[in-house]
Every structure is written in structure tokens, then in C-alpha cells.
Amino acid sequence: MHANVAAVLENTKHPHKVHHHGELPGDIRSPADFAAALGYESGRITKAVLLRSRDRKHFAVALCSVNKKLDLSLIAQHLGAKRMTMASPEELNEKLGYPPIGVSPLGCGTIPVLIDEGLLAFPSILAGAGEIGVEVEMDPVHLQMAAGAEFLPLAC
Image (cartoon, rainbow, N blue to C red; front, side):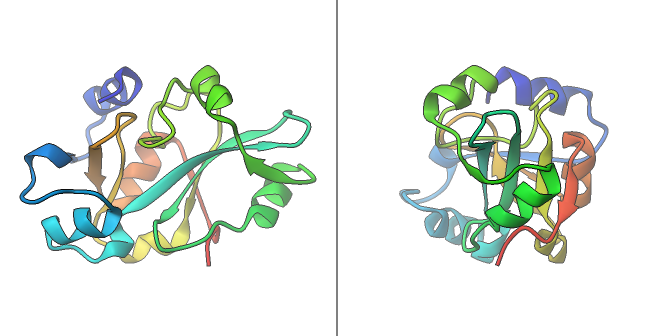
């Protein structure tokens, strides 16, 4: 688990569980494999991405179910940007220090974190822990509080 995520989890009073893919039965090669190994619906598995405006004045981490697509226009409008796009791996490393697979909504410092409100339908969700093959499971509201995030209708 990334040090930024570990620091947030150490200081949070919200219940959470850490899952290591290597400790689960079977090979975990996809979010569907991960969900199946846990006996969960795949919508509970999330993807987090670092987004940036074209002028690089606005950055945000957006989180939604792996089976949904982010509404980049809505995110841009919310942030007061003209257009948002995926940040490069170099920007991700520079801003957060996370690998391209394993981005976490936790430990993002001053970068805004936006969570799709559709995730509120689940009793818990699983988000990257800033390291490949490690996920944090939390109630979506607890994750929102621990990340200092905001819920929005981000995905379809």
C-alpha cells in the first residue's frame, strides 16, 4: 500500500479492510476476477483516474464503478475548466506518486477528489490503495469523508 494511503487509513476512525489480490483464491487478472473472488457485484469495484484540464490549471481524481464511464464534460464544468482529459503517467507520478494501475482517492492532498454518487447504492466499495494489486474496502460515505471528497453524478 502506498504511504499516502497508509497515512490516511492510520488516521481515520472509519472501518475499512485491505485486500491483497495475491491472497485471494484464483488469479486476479481483471476487476471481474476480483469481484468474483470476493463474491461481490462488479459495480462495487472502482476505478480512480487523475484528470487534468488542457491548460493544466485544474486537476482532480475521479472515482466511479469499473463498469461505468466518467462524464468528463460534467467534471470540467464543475471545476470551471473548458475540458478535462486523463493526466499522463508522468503527471500522475509527479502529483500523487501513484502507479497508473492502483490510483487511490485517498491521500491526494490538495487535489480535489470526486466520487460518482451511484456508488452510494453499495454497502461498501473497493478502491485502489496506491499500489498494484491492493484495494481498500470502505462504506462509500466513509471513503468520501476519509478522502475529503465530493459526490457528484459523474458516470453513466
